[in-house]
Amino acid sequence: MYTEQDFKNDLLANIVSDFDENSDMYTALLESEFQFENTSIFTRKVWNTYQRYLRIYCQQKFKTFLEENSSYLLSMADRVHGERNEYYIMRIDIVATFSPINNGVGPGFISISKAIKINKTTDYIGEGGCGTVYKVFDDVLNQYVAYKIFDPSSFHQADIDFLRKRFIGEGKKLIGYRHPNIVAGYEIGKIEDTPYIKMEYVEGKTLLQYVKETNPDNIVRINLANDLIAAIGYAHSKEDIHRDLSYSNIIITKAGELKLLDFGFSKGELDTSYDTTQCPVRTKFSPPEIASGAEYTFSSEVYCIGAIIYSIFTGKEFNIQNLNEINEIDIPLLYRDIILKCLDKEPNNRFRKRLL
Image 1 (cartoon, rainbow, N blue to C red):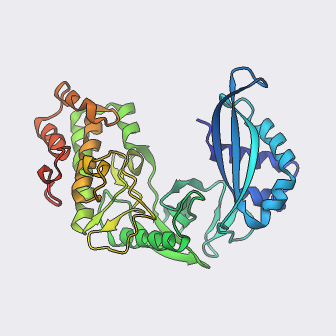
Image 2: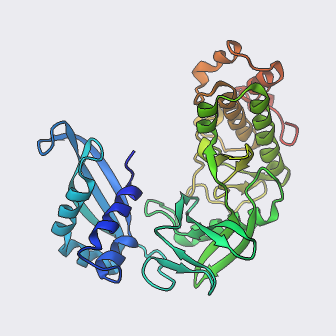
Image 3: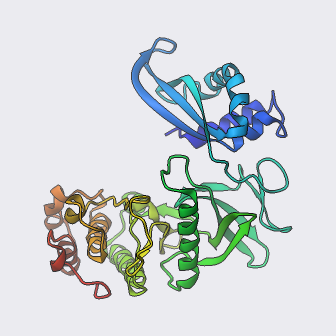
């Protein structure tokens, strides 16, 4: 799939021929966020392609400049996007938003310290939990680490100070945790007013991708299920609910180790300061009580654990309608029972926290 970030990287690489890396054009686009809007409208320019609109969320100071150069951008987008897939960019909208960080030794760089400079293009890994993540080699630790820089999406509706508080809270949790199946946090710092989290760099495949591609035997699947239970059980023992369990937040490393990531939505049981109207729970597995409007609890998270263990053993995305499939494949009886107990419609019938 050709994503917005892929397109942005290609666009930046191509405009260097017309604008150098110190130009307003390069800087404006580098510090912007791109969003595609796909339509069902055919265009005749290339047969059997659909129209696609592009929204560029930029800093206020660059809005007029980009609007004045919109014809150039559309022409360049036409050339760069080309026939990468079945969509064609037909319109570009420029939208001003809050300013992301722009610190460092020049456009496209972030300076953590004199020794650590992040190249925002080549060191980029991905995004999540109100931050952009970069991979950097740490000379002291003699290993790669990840820097998560506070950079909330333009699509977040919450107040930016609230998001910053949640981001710092995530860093504090990771530094306080000590578990082999939870990504380790090393440091919380600030670049001027922009916080960052230095953490363990985890490389591997997402959980569902791993079980689909490797089709592991039941011994491996059992180990993955046990590691998941241990990681979530540890967080629960700290009175924390992860609240954003998903396949993409669970990575299986090249060594076969399970790592739980992204605690940006986590909440302590006694934390009454978390405003769920600003940052609602984004559960992927829809515990029945949540669909009915109830609050997300430890028991709701146990339901999500059951859904993920279902996927570990079946190699399929969870669908409660297909739950009977676990009776048709070779799943150890203990783990079949665990899945069914976790997925009980009645929250009080599920496992209690810490007793998984």
